[in-house]
Each structure stands twice: as structure tokens, then as C-alpha cells.
Image 1 (cartoon, protein in one colour):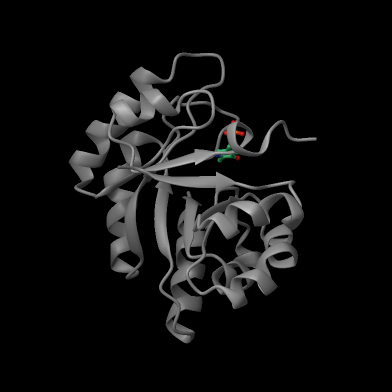
Image 2 (cartoon, rainbow, N blue to C red):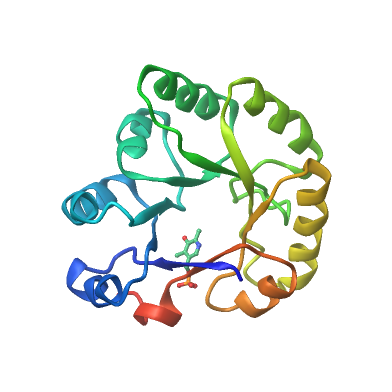
Length: 193
Ligand SMILES: *Cc1c(COP(=O)(O)O)cnc(C)c1O
């Protein structure tokens, strides 16, 4: 069974807390600052809550990100990998990391190109990063399944356990392609304002 990350970005703790009270543990946010403001207190009260960073991480925010996030889904460059590694070794964090893959080869999207993936993965391993899987956001205007299929093959090639893929519009297809972490926002919380 894949884990469901309830993507709570832009929603207030008032909207989120019923889900926490129900027992849901995994939540996703896009921005470091928003997560710190929204989650610091709640997370201190419930140590079992897991927070996932889904959005772009700037190197100057790494310090704050590692204090609050248990998972980072958006590792996509060497400088960021170095920064995480350095900050981790100075403290005792062990964040779980997904490498983001630009699976549709889109200019405007973040992510490692698939042809550089193995090399980048080795680079991260040499830095002692805890890489647990691969993440992707397929092109908006295309059917996701062929991209998910490619991700499955890449995951096997790199020999990792996890795939972070599937959003509100395509999570069923992601499950068929062995996703282990679905990132679902609007189907849970409703339309974002
Ligand atoms: C917002 C977001 C989601 C959730 O999107 P929905 O379509 O609302 O399910 C998933 N992944 C990432 C990276 C996001 O930014």
C-alpha cells in the first residue's frame, strides 16, 4: 500500500487538524517558511507526524528545512546536495531524500535529467545522503502513465525502494506503476484559494 501524503499547502491548521485528530501522519508542504510557521508547534506535540517538503529548496533555507522536514522530495542539484550533507554532519539530522527527475524533459521544470541520474545518485551517496527514492511531476498537459512507467524503470535501474508520484488527477495511474508515496492535495482539502 502506498503512503498518502496529504498536501496541506495554503491551508490553515484549522483545516488540517481534523485529519491529524483522525490519525493521519504524513503531510506535505511546498515552502519552508510556511511550514515552519504552520507546523512547528503541532509537530512538537506529536512526534509521530511526518512532514514532507515537496517544493523547490533554496540552499540558504536548508538549515530551517532540516529542522522541520522528515522528507525532502526535491533534491535536484549538486550544490543543494552538498549543503544538506554539510548541515547534516554538523547536526544529527537524517532526512530522507528523493531525487527529483525531470521526466518530461521540460525546460521550465526542476529535476535531474534522466541521462544524468546515475551519476547524480552516486554523487549523493558519496556525500552520505539518505536517498530513498525518485520523485517526478509529469507534464501537465499529457497523460501521466507513460512517465510513471519510465520512473519505474529508472527506480529499478538505480535500485531504490521508493517512488514519489501521483497527485489528485493521476494517483490511480501512479498506484498501477508502483508509487509508494502519493502526494494528494485538492482531492483531500478541496480547491486551493
Ligand atoms: C501541490 C502539489 C501536489 C498536490 O497537488 P494536487 O493536484 O492538489 O493533488 C503534489 N505535488 C507537488 C509537488 C505539489 O506542489
